[in-house]
Image (cartoon, rainbow, N blue to C red):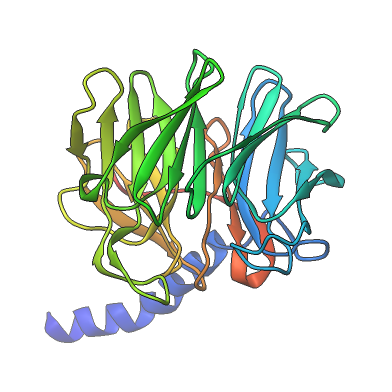
Length: 294
């Protein structure tokens, strides 16, 4: 029996490896005109994808060379520099006909129909604004990963929603009903942006501010957070390059591993397509997403 098992493994292993390789063959991919892509977002109102591109100056460089690209869901670039005048744009979300983006120490709004800037709101004492999410009432939530603060912008006013070690240096944000889902970077950030403690997936109740861990154990240096459409989440780890699937019970599995820099992804649940910016590879690609996690 042992010999049969060994031979079975030898016979089937190439097919297992091939299957994994086939699963990660991109549906489409772009490298030309792509420079440090940080976030990809599907605006359901317009049906278009928007991609924030940091450019050559790095994530904290105030150099004016950042922009947002507009694509259709088949990967065709409609307009590479759809919105300009940014430094190092990161998180993207929309409310109504307005697309919001974080840009180091400010949040900036653009008209989705024409790409023209409509608002720019400077955040006093901001250190490193990262992801952004929008509530159904138009409230804009955004994270300062270095300062470990989550802000909210409502009725033209900025206020702090949550701060401190309990939110574990928040990065990725997602609004689900009356909860804000947080992809935490982790505790004790080092000079190279690694952490002594990995971050967890958290849930913040927007009514009573209670914070509940969704993953039982620390998961990674988390960046993008998207719903899988089935009660779970797809989460990226920027440092390790991993894409996790977290089910509704909080159990996680590694779906795939990419080079360092797997950033803030989009997920088209009705098509099971994941669109991943690989920031350090200057690449954005779409993949069929399949998971064994239940």
